[in-house]
Image: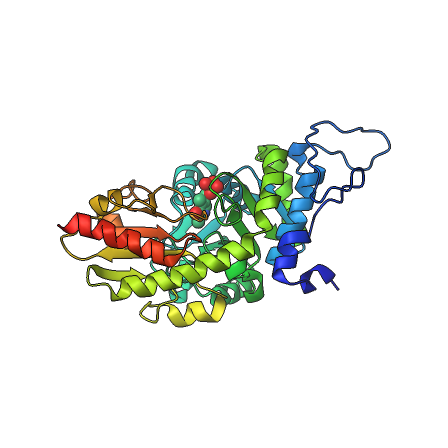
Length: 385
Ligand SMILES: *Cc1c(COP(=O)(O)O)cnc(C)c1O
């Protein structure tokens, strides 16, 4: 039995995978920056691009424990993790089913690279399981999902997707970035491979670019076989930073999720807000499903201001909440998907996805919600007058 999975979540975050400092008895893992290790009398050839330096291996144990998997691998970015993992399980002539709304970088990777590799792909028409079913082909090898989705926080039924995949002998992958392992552990629902942009909640302080993959020993071996050739490993200094960040992940993400629920409820009642998208609100189309597969509902929400209030002017008038591209840091940020993350889509495509021009995506931080509310109130006042 795997004893580390019996530890409580904060203990896993703090301790699993730590390297004991035998030399000086320091409190934290020593950082080994060597790119060169003695080759005689050692059975492992250690090299950062082989993903097996002491710090890399230690951090992978922590991430595997968080996702309840046998093994894990860390990468130089979320996209390195996503691209390497997809390509590790797809070859010429294979087909992959991807959900309709995906992180922009993943979408671009698929539509810009797959054709020349001879890999076929289909995007589903909606997030309903029937549409996943319809997209399946005899040569389908992988189903790729991302839940909650960006920016409308729609929820995909993980159990249904896993069942469909198992019936067709197909591998399932999830981009679990938005939920983080704190809010959902997809392996509990039968998903095979969990992928993260560790740049987001795992890093949590907007100062680390990294990616992670967690899965069974044999699936990770298959990812590693390609990963060592593509070379997307993570530098040991950043590995060490990420280990430090993960110690507080549960504290941060739980607080961000509680804050987000409070902010969603506040915004939903607001006279100047037309609509709020948050899976923790009863008004959300997937509330029941979200409740069945998530612990908390996450720190991300989206909202539309009432008719006639300019979203960009409103965001410029904020003083505490930062208008910012990225997400998941301890500080609250907002952005307009039409101007940023989804700017490359046509107006028609955005409309199809339900992304209105006035939509604002809100990454809720750990601040006091009363201060966030005050900031929104003063910005609205300035915008409306
Ligand atoms: C940011 C992000 C990515 C890409 O990660 P990088 O670390 O920027 O490469 C992938 N998926 C989701 C959901 C993201 O938010």
